[in-house]
Image (cartoon, rainbow, N blue to C red; front, side, top):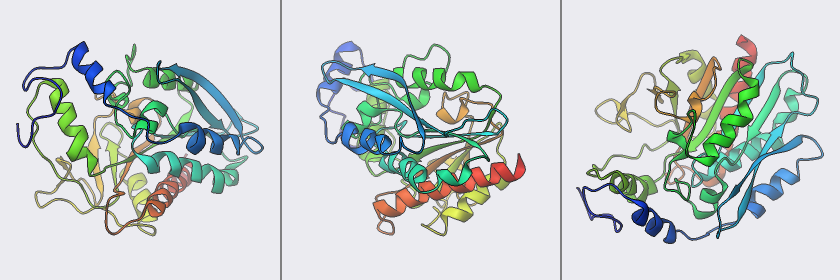
Length: 306
Protein backbone atom coordinates (compact mmCIF):
# COMPACT_ATOMS: atom_id res chain seq x y z
CA UNK A 1 0.00 0.00 0.00
CA UNK A 2 1.26 3.48 -0.87
CA UNK A 3 1.26 6.22 1.76
CA UNK A 4 0.01 5.86 5.31
CA UNK A 5 -2.21 2.87 6.14
CA UNK A 6 -5.90 3.67 6.60
CA UNK A 7 -6.68 3.94 10.33
CA UNK A 8 -9.31 1.17 10.29
CA UNK A 9 -8.72 -2.51 9.69
CA UNK A 10 -5.68 -4.64 8.94
CA UNK A 11 -3.77 -4.07 5.72
CA UNK A 12 -4.73 -6.61 3.09
CA UNK A 13 -7.81 -7.88 4.94
CA UNK A 14 -11.34 -6.86 3.90
CA UNK A 15 -13.45 -5.23 6.59
CA UNK A 16 -15.95 -7.17 8.62
CA UNK A 17 -18.81 -5.89 10.76
CA UNK A 18 -16.49 -4.53 13.46
CA UNK A 19 -14.44 -2.45 11.03
CA UNK A 20 -17.57 -1.06 9.37
CA UNK A 21 -18.95 -0.13 12.78
CA UNK A 22 -15.67 1.59 13.63
CA UNK A 23 -15.82 3.51 10.36
CA UNK A 24 -19.39 4.65 11.03
CA UNK A 25 -18.47 5.75 14.55
CA UNK A 26 -15.92 8.16 13.04
CA UNK A 27 -18.55 9.96 10.95
CA UNK A 28 -19.94 13.25 12.27
CA UNK A 29 -22.81 15.43 11.14
CA UNK A 30 -21.27 18.48 9.47
CA UNK A 31 -24.27 20.14 7.82
CA UNK A 32 -28.06 19.95 7.73
CA UNK A 33 -30.04 18.11 5.06
CA UNK A 34 -33.20 19.69 6.51
CA UNK A 35 -31.88 23.24 6.18
CA UNK A 36 -29.85 22.97 2.96
CA UNK A 37 -32.02 20.59 0.93
CA UNK A 38 -35.49 19.95 2.38
CA UNK A 39 -36.18 23.63 3.02
CA UNK A 40 -35.21 24.52 -0.55
CA UNK A 41 -37.45 21.78 -1.92
CA UNK A 42 -40.32 22.96 0.27
CA UNK A 43 -39.91 26.45 -1.21
CA UNK A 44 -40.64 24.98 -4.66
CA UNK A 45 -43.95 23.36 -3.72
CA UNK A 46 -46.01 26.26 -5.07
CA UNK A 47 -44.67 25.60 -8.58
CA UNK A 48 -43.86 21.88 -8.68
CA UNK A 49 -45.16 18.64 -7.25
CA UNK A 50 -43.00 17.22 -4.48
CA UNK A 51 -43.14 13.51 -3.70
CA UNK A 52 -41.65 11.67 -0.74
CA UNK A 53 -40.64 8.36 -2.32
CA UNK A 54 -39.21 6.83 0.82
CA UNK A 55 -37.59 7.38 4.19
CA UNK A 56 -34.27 6.20 5.54
CA UNK A 57 -34.18 5.23 9.22
CA UNK A 58 -30.55 5.37 10.26
CA UNK A 59 -30.84 5.25 14.03
CA UNK A 60 -29.32 6.66 16.12
CA UNK A 61 -28.57 9.36 13.56
CA UNK A 62 -32.22 9.96 12.69
CA UNK A 63 -34.60 9.53 9.77
CA UNK A 64 -34.27 11.14 6.37
CA UNK A 65 -37.07 11.80 3.85
CA UNK A 66 -36.28 10.93 0.24
CA UNK A 67 -37.76 13.67 -1.93
CA UNK A 68 -38.39 14.02 -5.65
CA UNK A 69 -39.59 17.06 -7.60
CA UNK A 70 -41.98 16.50 -10.52
CA UNK A 71 -43.40 18.73 -13.21
CA UNK A 72 -46.86 19.94 -12.34
CA UNK A 73 -49.38 18.72 -14.92
CA UNK A 74 -47.46 15.54 -15.75
CA UNK A 75 -48.38 14.37 -19.26
CA UNK A 76 -47.62 10.77 -20.25
CA UNK A 77 -47.51 11.92 -23.87
CA UNK A 78 -44.38 13.98 -23.24
CA UNK A 79 -40.80 12.70 -22.97
CA UNK A 80 -39.51 12.32 -19.41
CA UNK A 81 -36.20 13.80 -18.29
CA UNK A 82 -34.55 12.42 -15.14
CA UNK A 83 -32.06 14.45 -13.09
CA UNK A 84 -30.32 12.94 -10.08
CA UNK A 85 -27.85 14.47 -7.64
CA UNK A 86 -26.24 13.61 -4.34
CA UNK A 87 -25.82 9.91 -5.03
CA UNK A 88 -22.52 10.61 -3.32
CA UNK A 89 -23.51 12.88 -0.47
CA UNK A 90 -20.21 14.78 -0.31
CA UNK A 91 -20.53 16.01 -3.91
CA UNK A 92 -22.21 19.28 -3.02
CA UNK A 93 -22.72 20.86 -6.43
CA UNK A 94 -24.64 17.81 -7.62
CA UNK A 95 -27.26 18.54 -4.97
CA UNK A 96 -27.23 22.33 -5.12
CA UNK A 97 -26.87 22.41 -8.91
CA UNK A 98 -29.97 20.25 -9.28
CA UNK A 99 -31.90 22.56 -6.96
CA UNK A 100 -30.63 25.62 -8.81
CA UNK A 101 -31.78 24.11 -12.11
CA UNK A 102 -35.31 23.60 -10.74
CA UNK A 103 -35.48 27.06 -9.23
CA UNK A 104 -34.13 28.86 -12.29
CA UNK A 105 -34.79 26.78 -15.40
CA UNK A 106 -37.33 24.00 -14.93
CA UNK A 107 -40.47 26.07 -15.52
CA UNK A 108 -39.37 26.70 -19.12
CA UNK A 109 -40.07 23.04 -19.94
CA UNK A 110 -43.74 23.08 -18.93
CA UNK A 111 -45.77 21.43 -21.69
CA UNK A 112 -42.59 20.22 -23.43
CA UNK A 113 -41.22 17.57 -21.10
CA UNK A 114 -41.92 15.83 -17.84
CA UNK A 115 -39.17 16.54 -15.33
CA UNK A 116 -38.30 14.22 -12.46
CA UNK A 117 -35.54 15.69 -10.29
CA UNK A 118 -34.09 13.89 -7.27
CA UNK A 119 -31.63 16.40 -5.81
CA UNK A 120 -30.24 14.39 -2.89
CA UNK A 121 -30.28 10.61 -3.23
CA UNK A 122 -28.07 10.10 -0.14
CA UNK A 123 -29.10 12.51 2.65
CA UNK A 124 -27.18 10.78 5.50
CA UNK A 125 -24.00 11.04 3.46
CA UNK A 126 -24.82 14.64 2.51
CA UNK A 127 -24.82 15.62 6.17
CA UNK A 128 -21.53 13.84 6.82
CA UNK A 129 -19.85 14.95 3.58
CA UNK A 130 -19.16 11.33 2.73
CA UNK A 131 -19.27 9.02 -0.24
CA UNK A 132 -20.77 5.96 1.43
CA UNK A 133 -23.98 5.25 3.31
CA UNK A 134 -23.87 4.17 6.99
CA UNK A 135 -23.28 0.55 5.98
CA UNK A 136 -20.01 1.54 4.24
CA UNK A 137 -21.67 0.92 0.87
CA UNK A 138 -21.22 3.14 -2.18
CA UNK A 139 -24.74 3.73 -3.55
CA UNK A 140 -23.19 4.40 -6.96
CA UNK A 141 -22.03 0.80 -7.26
CA UNK A 142 -25.36 -0.66 -6.13
CA UNK A 143 -28.01 0.30 -8.68
CA UNK A 144 -29.01 -3.30 -9.31
CA UNK A 145 -31.79 -5.74 -8.50
CA UNK A 146 -31.93 -6.54 -4.81
CA UNK A 147 -29.63 -3.63 -4.00
CA UNK A 148 -28.20 -3.71 -0.46
CA UNK A 149 -27.92 0.10 -0.50
CA UNK A 150 -31.24 1.51 0.65
CA UNK A 151 -30.69 4.78 -1.19
CA UNK A 152 -30.21 2.95 -4.50
CA UNK A 153 -33.12 0.56 -3.92
CA UNK A 154 -35.49 3.45 -3.18
CA UNK A 155 -34.50 5.36 -6.31
CA UNK A 156 -34.83 2.24 -8.46
CA UNK A 157 -38.36 1.74 -7.09
CA UNK A 158 -39.25 5.38 -7.85
CA UNK A 159 -38.10 5.13 -11.45
CA UNK A 160 -39.34 1.60 -12.23
CA UNK A 161 -42.90 2.65 -13.23
CA UNK A 162 -41.36 4.94 -15.87
CA UNK A 163 -39.49 2.12 -17.61
CA UNK A 164 -39.26 2.77 -21.34
CA UNK A 165 -40.49 6.37 -21.02
CA UNK A 166 -37.34 8.19 -19.85
CA UNK A 167 -35.64 9.93 -22.76
CA UNK A 168 -32.69 11.40 -20.85
CA UNK A 169 -30.95 10.83 -17.52
CA UNK A 170 -28.19 13.08 -16.21
CA UNK A 171 -26.52 12.19 -12.90
CA UNK A 172 -24.64 15.06 -11.23
CA UNK A 173 -21.31 14.34 -9.50
CA UNK A 174 -18.03 15.92 -8.40
CA UNK A 175 -14.43 14.75 -8.26
CA UNK A 176 -12.73 16.29 -5.23
CA UNK A 177 -9.31 16.33 -3.58
CA UNK A 178 -10.85 14.23 -0.79
CA UNK A 179 -11.20 11.37 -3.30
CA UNK A 180 -7.45 10.86 -2.93
CA UNK A 181 -7.05 11.92 0.71
CA UNK A 182 -9.95 9.88 2.11
CA UNK A 183 -12.35 8.00 -0.12
CA UNK A 184 -10.06 5.95 -2.35
CA UNK A 185 -7.84 4.98 0.60
CA UNK A 186 -10.98 3.99 2.54
CA UNK A 187 -12.20 1.91 -0.41
CA UNK A 188 -8.89 0.08 -0.66
CA UNK A 189 -8.88 -0.60 3.09
CA UNK A 190 -12.51 -1.80 3.11
CA UNK A 191 -11.83 -4.24 0.28
CA UNK A 192 -8.44 -5.40 1.59
CA UNK A 193 -6.58 -4.06 -1.44
CA UNK A 194 -3.52 -1.91 -1.96
CA UNK A 195 -4.15 1.80 -2.41
CA UNK A 196 -2.61 3.08 -5.62
CA UNK A 197 -2.69 6.90 -5.70
CA UNK A 198 -4.33 8.50 -8.72
CA UNK A 199 -4.83 11.99 -10.11
CA UNK A 200 -7.65 14.50 -9.74
CA UNK A 201 -8.79 16.12 -13.01
CA UNK A 202 -8.79 19.92 -12.93
CA UNK A 203 -12.09 20.83 -14.53
CA UNK A 204 -15.44 19.54 -15.70
CA UNK A 205 -15.78 16.25 -17.56
CA UNK A 206 -18.41 13.67 -18.45
CA UNK A 207 -18.65 9.94 -18.07
CA UNK A 208 -20.73 8.48 -20.89
CA UNK A 209 -22.26 5.00 -20.90
CA UNK A 210 -20.19 2.81 -23.22
CA UNK A 211 -23.37 0.92 -24.19
CA UNK A 212 -24.97 4.14 -25.57
CA UNK A 213 -22.30 6.80 -25.79
CA UNK A 214 -24.15 9.38 -27.95
CA UNK A 215 -21.06 11.57 -28.55
CA UNK A 216 -23.00 14.53 -29.94
CA UNK A 217 -25.05 14.63 -26.73
CA UNK A 218 -21.90 14.64 -24.60
CA UNK A 219 -20.34 17.38 -26.74
CA UNK A 220 -23.43 19.58 -26.47
CA UNK A 221 -23.22 19.42 -22.68
CA UNK A 222 -19.50 20.20 -22.58
CA UNK A 223 -19.99 23.08 -25.02
CA UNK A 224 -22.57 24.62 -22.70
CA UNK A 225 -20.53 24.06 -19.54
CA UNK A 226 -17.43 25.57 -21.17
CA UNK A 227 -19.28 28.90 -21.05
CA UNK A 228 -19.34 28.60 -17.25
CA UNK A 229 -16.14 26.78 -16.26
CA UNK A 230 -13.21 24.97 -17.83
CA UNK A 231 -13.25 21.44 -19.25
CA UNK A 232 -10.71 19.04 -17.75
CA UNK A 233 -7.73 18.18 -19.95
CA UNK A 234 -6.53 14.61 -20.31
CA UNK A 235 -3.56 13.39 -18.29
CA UNK A 236 -0.31 12.94 -20.27
CA UNK A 237 -1.22 9.30 -20.93
CA UNK A 238 -4.50 10.33 -22.60
CA UNK A 239 -6.72 9.34 -19.69
CA UNK A 240 -8.94 10.95 -17.06
CA UNK A 241 -9.06 9.06 -13.74
CA UNK A 242 -7.37 6.20 -15.54
CA UNK A 243 -9.96 5.85 -18.33
CA UNK A 244 -9.19 6.65 -21.98
CA UNK A 245 -10.48 10.02 -23.16
CA UNK A 246 -12.79 9.32 -26.12
CA UNK A 247 -13.44 13.03 -26.86
CA UNK A 248 -12.37 16.23 -25.12
CA UNK A 249 -13.68 16.01 -21.56
CA UNK A 250 -15.41 12.63 -22.08
CA UNK A 251 -14.63 9.14 -20.78
CA UNK A 252 -16.84 6.04 -20.81
CA UNK A 253 -17.89 3.39 -18.29
CA UNK A 254 -20.14 0.36 -18.68
CA UNK A 255 -22.66 1.93 -16.34
CA UNK A 256 -25.08 -0.96 -15.94
CA UNK A 257 -22.41 -3.59 -15.36
CA UNK A 258 -20.83 -1.39 -12.67
CA UNK A 259 -24.15 -0.71 -10.92
CA UNK A 260 -23.90 3.04 -11.57
CA UNK A 261 -26.87 5.36 -11.25
CA UNK A 262 -26.53 6.34 -14.91
CA UNK A 263 -27.19 2.71 -15.88
CA UNK A 264 -30.52 2.42 -14.08
CA UNK A 265 -32.78 3.37 -17.03
CA UNK A 266 -33.10 2.55 -20.71
CA UNK A 267 -32.85 6.22 -21.68
CA UNK A 268 -31.12 6.88 -24.98
CA UNK A 269 -29.31 9.94 -23.66
CA UNK A 270 -27.32 9.27 -20.48
CA UNK A 271 -24.35 10.91 -18.81
CA UNK A 272 -22.63 11.49 -15.49
CA UNK A 273 -21.18 14.92 -14.80
CA UNK A 274 -17.98 15.49 -12.83
CA UNK A 275 -16.85 18.93 -11.71
CA UNK A 276 -13.81 19.87 -9.62
CA UNK A 277 -14.77 22.22 -6.77
CA UNK A 278 -11.22 22.36 -5.38
CA UNK A 279 -9.79 23.92 -8.53
CA UNK A 280 -8.11 27.32 -8.11
CA UNK A 281 -9.88 28.22 -11.34
CA UNK A 282 -13.43 27.59 -10.12
CA UNK A 283 -15.68 28.65 -7.24
CA UNK A 284 -18.48 26.66 -5.57
CA UNK A 285 -20.96 29.00 -7.25
CA UNK A 286 -19.42 28.23 -10.65
CA UNK A 287 -19.67 24.51 -9.96
CA UNK A 288 -23.38 24.83 -9.16
CA UNK A 289 -23.88 26.87 -12.32
CA UNK A 290 -21.96 24.30 -14.36
CA UNK A 291 -24.24 21.51 -13.12
CA UNK A 292 -27.38 23.51 -13.92
CA UNK A 293 -26.01 24.41 -17.36
CA UNK A 294 -25.29 20.74 -18.01
CA UNK A 295 -28.87 19.81 -17.15
CA UNK A 296 -30.30 22.47 -19.46
CA UNK A 297 -28.06 21.41 -22.34
CA UNK A 298 -28.90 17.74 -21.80
CA UNK A 299 -32.65 18.35 -21.82
CA UNK A 300 -32.47 20.69 -24.81
CA UNK A 301 -30.48 18.15 -26.82
CA UNK A 302 -32.83 15.30 -25.91
CA UNK A 303 -35.89 17.37 -26.86
CA UNK A 304 -34.34 18.38 -30.18
CA UNK A 305 -33.52 14.78 -31.09
CA UNK A 306 -36.33 12.86 -29.41
